[in-house]
Length: 135
Figure 1: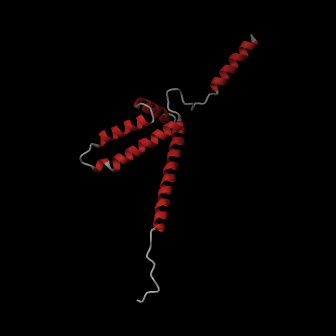
Figure 2: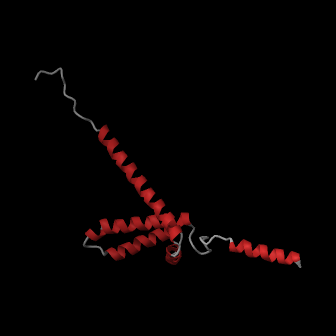
């Protein structure tokens, strides 16, 4: 009887110690969700920056197409994404960690692009005056 009680108590303690932030089955894991969310944010930015300026295209329809391409690339469904998004919205600490990582990624990418542009500027041929020719 004592053995059964110990097993029951141990089981209760084990399950009560389970992280409140554990990602349940059917929800995208944080790394995958972060990657998909990054692509979704880039698609939104592309739509805002370029598609809205093209009067021949409908921004909402184009954005839906881009989202579908993202879902296809990541092999998930729209429902998978939005179900996961709702889960992370209801777990602010997990969402905050994910968003902080996305901000760091954006900052890093911007820095790399800026460095590449500066390097290109230093490599462009500059005319050096010829001191041997008569002026």
